[in-house]
Length: 467
Image (cartoon, rainbow, N blue to C red; front, top):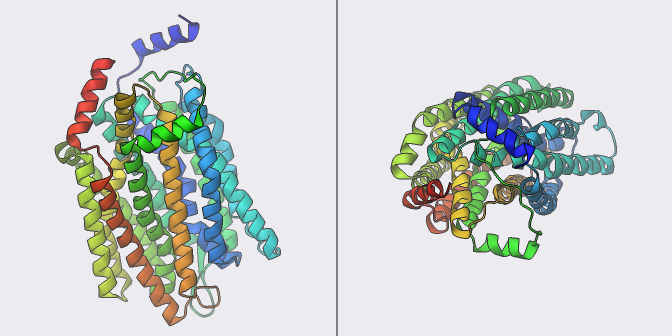
């Protein structure tokens, strides 16, 4: 037995059982993630279209190009994580400490308002360069090991469901700061009474978010404990076998398609709130309130989601929540309200669908990891999570691409941002795009994703006996 194995065995004898510190630590990990991820999802397109003057169509193309890069970097990072040696701290946590600085710096550089007066060619180059550096390299380097940690912190399905809950709470806290505080800081009222995004204020806000991200990652590193020993993979990498195995893995395909649809709804809605409130409703106070609403709804749902998923199953609960969200947004589309506060109530009701799925989705990916081990006899936490992470990035890009394309179709630009026909189009996009995403989510869960309540519980029993 090596000295590392001896040290890990001693640590296993003395480490604390799974508890509140693990939950808080894992929560702070996604708090750190979303200080940069949600900032990009909500504000990057708005920043480059309204401050830097870049076409929303070009921004959408950039995000799709970055996803092509991600197809390689995400899988490469997953393999790197799986093949890394466990340390005294574990296999996954050390990557948080290594990569938290680079991801924070890269995020800050995306909002370089000091280049506002440069020529358009340079601004487009800088946008492409910093976005790919942040999302395809640095964010990948910290997010994949962080996501893989959940299956190592505990092997119990109920513990993982709680980690999924707490992770979503961390995301909501970051989203609340970005959605509530930032609109009050980064906008100003111009001479015509319109709410306009300030480039310099946006850069300062990005710096604050980057500092917060580093702090949150380090809290996660110090509070969490990896209890499930995950061995280092040493066999030769075979890309053909990897792709073939993933395609044949119905659970993996199901969670990838479902997550893509969920992100299409969630992030399109997040992007469009930065247009519908200041442009259609001319009310950034309601935009800030929407962040509070999202947080409150998520906390309320968090109190019941674990028990509901235990009783009905995660797949079954997710299908119901997605149908609910689609129905509410379709009602909003036909209602055509011009009152920001009425729309906020509708937004709150629809957000129940997003909140429930978000709270259980991270437990669903650990279900997929377990199911893969049962079916194949191999455990590949990092590789599976890297593919899942790639699907989420595809969802992010698709949401931005769809939002950019639809905004282009309705004629949105700096010059037309407040024209009556354009703002009507903004309202329609805000309602219909998330509704369609919800419908696709329900269909993918129903007909592709196979891990119902019975199968998840059976897998847990098999792996418990194996270990």
